[in-house]
Length: 89
Image (cartoon, rainbow, N blue to C red; front, side, top):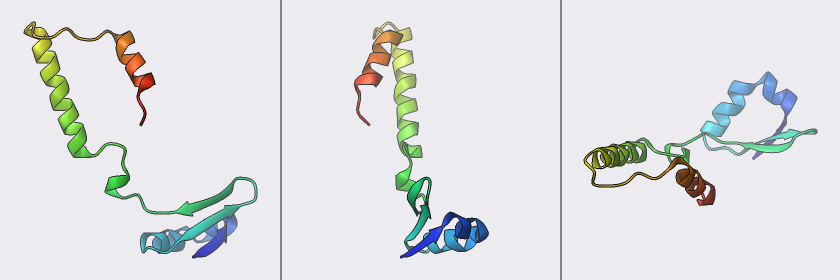
């Protein structure tokens, strides 16, 4: 593990980003903002994977089709907002 200052990071960003990409723990220490660990973002770190998004869009399209065919009643915007507020991510 290496601990560096914000000044060191600004002067050698590529070096420290390469170190983090190669698996080394790089800690960026700032007097005013605290400490941060540099780490590369991996595919599993994304909030929604491409596969999940595709499936969600497919299901949404099916709901629209079902509504247009009179098979289902769509929820109101207020109901959807309430569900979003209540959900935990």
